[in-house]
Image (cartoon, rainbow, N blue to C red; front, side):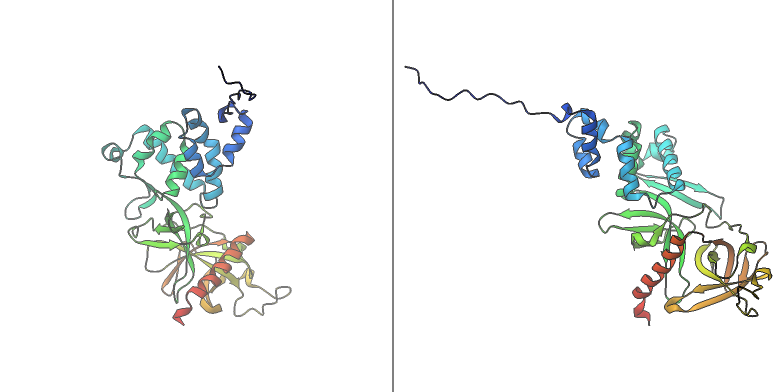
Amino acid sequence: MPLITNEAPQLMKKEASLLELPEAILDNILERLSPIELCSMSEVCTCLIGRCRSNVLWEKHVQRRWGRLLGDVAYREWQFHVMRIMNKESPSLQRNPEGLLGSFTGAWPFLCLCSYLENPGDLASLLLSNYSNMALYVSLQRGRFWFPAQVYRMTPFQLPRRYNGLLSYEHVSNTFQARCPTDEWRLIEKNITWDRLRLPPIHTSPYTLYVSNNNDLKPGDHVEVQMRKGSRTYDWCYGVIDHLESCDKDMNNHCSCEHSEMLVVSFKLQYSQWKSIAIKKEANGEQKIGLWKIGGIRKLEDLEDIRRWNTEHHMQISSLSYYV
């Protein structure tokens, strides 16, 4: 005799699929995922690969994480590597996909390394599928793309300065390492924090003299000065235009510094000390002042540039206190 029960048979419930969501909602969900989560999501099924690797999605992650360090020059260098990989123009790439891919400018002995890419062959599949922004993010995060930027450095008993370098990210320590793009490229500075880095404000080789109009400078202007000492390459040092010794420093009535043939630049050294030099305004080419060779002068118009120079100076002072 069959068993009679009062229980109704349970209905089978169909679970909703992620792919059944409206496209706008799905895109909104993907935009909220981190890069690691996007990579994991792209492996769920073939339908999600294109969405999770799209250039639009990864461009936002590139800008969010690297935007303040990647300028037009760095993007042009990246596109140079992309085209060479896609066109298979590099003999080293064909012979050894785990090698290096670099670009240079200038001529020996003033040859300058613009950027380089480690293990370029690994990126071919992403680039051939037109996922270049994801490839860029991965290359930066893994420290394989060495891109141009400027590094702030302050060493004991020397002028604080910024030098042009090629940067590579160290994800374990969340710091960078830098190579000089010139004849000192074998030297590597490590453990560089984010706050010591910036975009190059102008696109010029560290070998190139910056052309400036010094006649527009007046006392009180904040400037960056090209300087070199015992090297063929320029660094940038921060200074303030000062009055001549013969001036009574009365800007309203009697200051004649703007009409002088000479220009006084005061540099901030360690522990609030200052060092001043006098240079000719209309000199063509660099000028030699003691052991230093002075190049072009760039007037700082942006208050953020001035603030960062002074902030970095005070931060580095504390780290050098053991030299006192």
